[in-house]
Image (cartoon, rainbow, N blue to C red; front, side, top):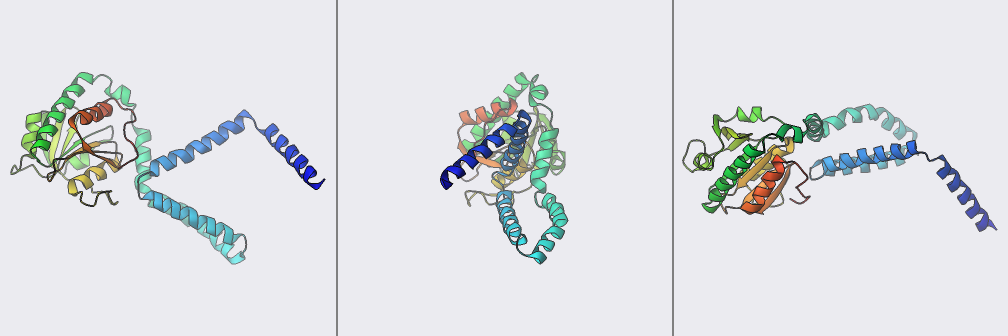
Length: 272
């Protein structure tokens, strides 16, 4: 009888709960789930994942302890304002990237009229990268997205020339004055060469990767640029975007990546 009464009570409570669910409640839950999903996607592949995990563990322990100990409860309640101030400081790079994404113009509107120029740029870049890879000449080419790279352009030498395979090969040829650093491309023009880029602060999957790869990941962690790296040691072609590095690309795959960059769609997996 006791089991039957428990089952009946559970059924009644479940029925009352379902009766209280409205379309507003469903939308409300979906919005909260969407926000949590967006935050997790934003932090994915960054050092913030470990920090977020640690913060969640500390909060869980603190809540459990605060429910039993009066003094600890007082400490947790009075520490909350400091925690709210510390979170934006700790996650500043990720929050900045999220706000930049929200502030960008719609890519289809921004790039819809530049298909012909984009195809020429893709052709010239893939030709140059193919030659640089074959001759094992190190290179770092950054394609500017909707977020400007002016502060990094100022660190290099202004070029302001149309993108061409011959010009790119000349800029990276060993012994030339501008072969060190990155070339930044804006639209169909090479804006600057020998630019200094920020290095990523996190560990890469392969410890043998050098400064060019760390700079490619670093610049794409901060904005929506795309970076192409040619390894001086092996001639391997790599591409970085959104702080993630795809390695050992051939020219055909590089072309598809550049097509996706100029006609944006989801192209990058979760691997590094």
